[in-house]
Image (tube, rainbow, N blue to C red; front, side, top):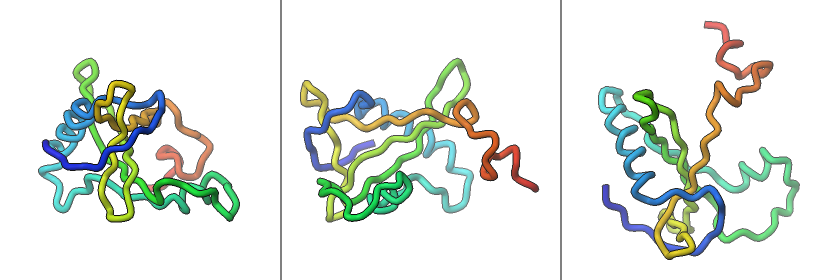
Length: 131
């Protein structure tokens, strides 16, 4: 899976190597080949995130106004675990891949999946949805 992307130096403890993300995303894409019109990623506006986090306007200046969330599957004990990989998106709609301390391209890896982290009292919790 080749990708051309802008690079920027961003710091976080939640970075994984680009190759890891590509492997998991590729596994997810392969799993979706039987689904008509599968979804591979979402783009999210910073305004939506600020509103969801309760940050009132005016929003502080940010380097990026949106980010893209890619879906992935990670093999783990012969079972697959959903993964989310995030990258900032520039004004032209291009992924901006962060660099680690050694200058290697990385991807933000946010993985705290439900059901382990679910709010079981939420009306959105899958166990509370009526069929």
